[in-house]
Length: 153
Image (cartoon, rainbow, N blue to C red; front, side, top):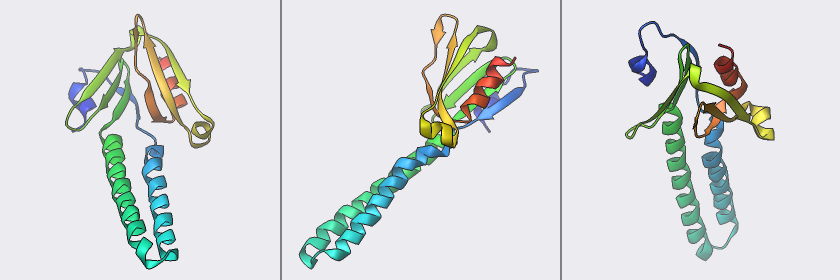
């Protein structure tokens, strides 16, 4: 059962659900590509050096797989919801971190997108409340749609 389903108040409705963008998988995929290149280099060197090169390649593959699993768990356990009453952000599998802000306390919503963020439609969102600020929600999928659902109430 999702966290948001446990904390919804009577009569409260979910307006929009977001998640982390698939771009969080980029670092482990990049490391895996580098590992493949290391294995290719290992085929081109002499036998004495090839063992060390293959060991470095194997370590790179293991690190890439660990990074991929970590990114998958982070994406799977992060919930970002806009309801008709509040904005809810939850992350974590074992240790849970939640942040909630009532809609009547929201002053502004800032969206920061890099060039790649604009191309692939992801970015960072900062919800600012009366006297309270939120830490940036990084690499959110479709950040402008997320912002529009918050400010169009």
